[in-house]
Image (cartoon, rainbow, N blue to C red; front, side, top):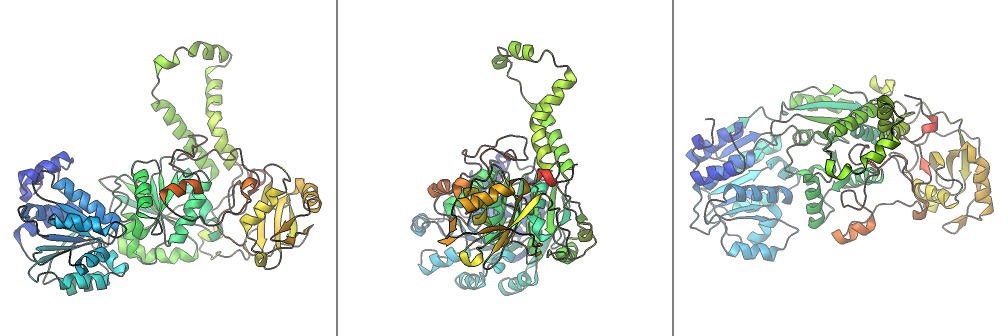
Length: 627
């Protein structure tokens, strides 16, 4: 069977599929649709993410639905509200030519009263999250006595999220003669157990091998030190000028921290996690779908339901705790016949986690070196040239200006004109990366665990002066607040800050040696205090302790002294408040300084910055090796 018509679907459904641009059924659709149409036997189906599971279970149900009855005849359970909304939207599109067929998504975070009102008008298909579905059942507003189909979509994730009790409660109020369909992208032991508990002698179908990755996705890994994880992430983004990606993190906190750093560095990025309100989540997802955002930093659960078919990369900032989750992550790219790349950023200690994933997905990871500054400059330059070749010239508007432009450029030959034109934008990245250190530590590549700084090679500190300051953790000092304190002294514009070490009662920091006298004069002459304690700063020759600075991660970049340097976690409130917290990329407020900076990234070294830290980042042009 090679067409939807041959699968046994009626003309109204076929017309809707044609309107949506569906041409030929996928493998899971070829197998599932005839099975559900011809049999009432329970079904256990495996299909990789992005292979059309929604159509596989919803089209045969729509073919058999009784549009004249207002009873709920099918309920589809989904782990997240985003996925529930996406499934409901798809079914609405599939049934747009079927008169009287109604679909409703029910989920938490939305008005239950509105959902009850719609239910009372008669809805044949319910798509719901387990929690809200149980709430409606308890209120006696959702009646399932005439249910014909129960679909468990993404059953593995529902178990991971702890919905077993809710599933038990829902199953208890459904008819015994219903048909239960279980669809999942992975089949760990827990899903097998739920299939045994809820399905009766199910038929099993599979589109591809269980838990295997799609052939459209290649898998790469980068070995980094923990302190360079964020710097490596930025280089991966910069070396791919056309990147359109999801960065997966393990926790909500990690997700927000990575997003905040990228936003601070000028990337078109936002975060998606469970702490956002529904309005905030909808706003972020809309911006990502229309590519106002080119990178989304997300947790595994929050990313479920994102219907994006043209992601170029999936980046694992850290590997998931459960290896089956890697299949879900990587399956977000390489969809609709397009190729994609799944990247894992790992330390030497974490390399051992790749083996089990390789066995699960049936593919090998490719060990890939972290991009050098030269590679990044080359790719960005070629991207600039592509943009010039593809630009549409508005002859009518520009013709009036050309005579004066030609006159100004008449003394430049073709080659010189090209060199100068390219240098306008290229010099920005060249300056930023010209002395960038090689993040590929040869000992890391050999598998030596260098997660700590002990025994690691130190950066040359001959151009830096090390200072002692008599405040520390007990004074609520952190690296950001220390940078703010330094900025407040207005020692010099764009002074470079090296390593920072925050200890219990005192701390150390490094500043450009050129401003040694100015630093001492500023702190001695301004009678500086911090949290009510008088500040004393002295030059010290004591060697670095090797202790990583408090706060971790990549360096602080261009902290503005007007902000006091304190860049603690921002509180998320409503949409109207988010714009007051900070200018968010993609909202129209934060315009990139140049288009030649990855995906809308601001020009490195943009005006308005003062002190800059070089710790664990690519921000020290005076002390880097030339590419």
